[in-house]
Length: 266
Image 1 (tube, rainbow, N blue to C red):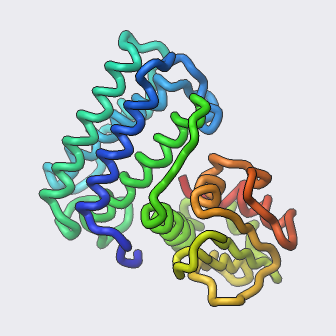
Image 2: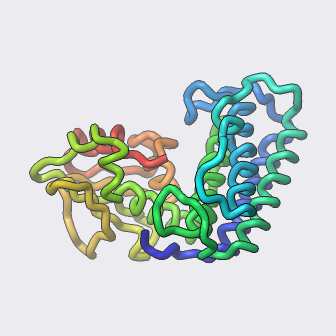
């Protein structure tokens, strides 16, 4: 994995900030509200998944766990808990603050189990900053609220999505994605509101593995997905449709749709 663009402290700050935003969204909400971007879940289930995830990871980081531990609480979700939205919001924030403190204390290189060999606690700091952001966006969208993301966080989120999705072992985890490979299958993803190098990526499916890399200036592809950075990030996470406001498809739409439906990380 390439080195993250942001520091562990910044990721920890974002875990706290995104959880606090989620709490503000929940103040007058009904936990039974469906979450369209997480099919089959309501706000109760979404918030349980995220809050239990905070506590699961907090324990891993504090103990420098050598392997994964039981994550049932973030997987088996109660659609009708005996709590209200305000209390659930406070519970989210408390878990986020505990996790953020553990990550700051661990720093980027503390040795512990991660899904990718050779990574340290910094892997989880980055991963959970974006996990929290995306699920906060899920909650906001379910409640009809706008989603805004700081540009540097959105750029790092786009880079992380591309870096993880392009790992060779993704074809071991998801062997069906080999069906995406073929001659002429290249895609470009371009944020139109930034000139930063992390705002443009090329996905090359023409070889034996999926290659995701920063796109060279002016580099073309069989199809390009263009749009504002935040909308682009949410579309890659399947939180926005490919026809969402601001997005533009140039080239082979069928290829883009095939890739989008089958190669998503998250």
